[in-house]
Amino acid sequence: MSHIFNPGYYDENDLKNEGFRSLGQNIQIAKNCTIIGLENISIGNNVRIDGFCSIIAAGDGEVALGSFIHIGAYCLLLGGDGIEMRNFSTISHGCRIYSRSDDYSGGYLTNPTVPEKFTNTTSGRVILERHTIVGSTSVILPNVTIGEGSSVGALSLVAKDLDRWGVYCGCPARKIKNRSKRLLELEDKLLDEVEQATLPYRGSHSPD
Image (cartoon, rainbow, N blue to C red; front, side):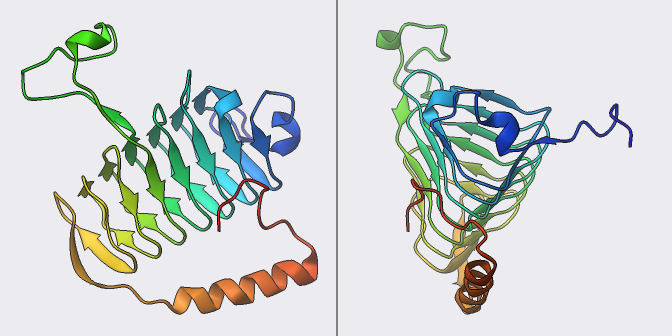
């Protein structure tokens, strides 16, 4: 197998001494990812993070990933004010999650090289509740919760909270219909199999 074009993944054994806040089992993180602030990052069980992702939780930031989570390639998670992905949540390739954002009105200076007193930053924790999925290249802005079971179509902008069990798309994202709850039945079947096989499910930090 080529190691030039297929750099592979780190697993929990490779990562256990790198300083993460907590690590579960059956973890895959592509070797070409950029991850900063490991001491502020917790990861549950059955998590895969694909290539060229950047996860930043430096300083007082935080990123908390539950179990059964997939983060597609080229995603960006800026966890300055906290990002939480709960069990069975997914973000597809090229998504961007911001927990802090500058004021674009022109009334203030912008970017992190400028002292805070000259800026007007919007900030707030971003939460993806259980069974949420966000389509490719979508953007999620600070202080937003995507309700349990909701899906967001590709190329969408999520600028405010989304209710539970909806299908949303657009810029800004708007609800177009309800989402099926059949996946809850499939979750029960999966967890039955997991229990029988004694495979890992939840990390100790993973929210219900």
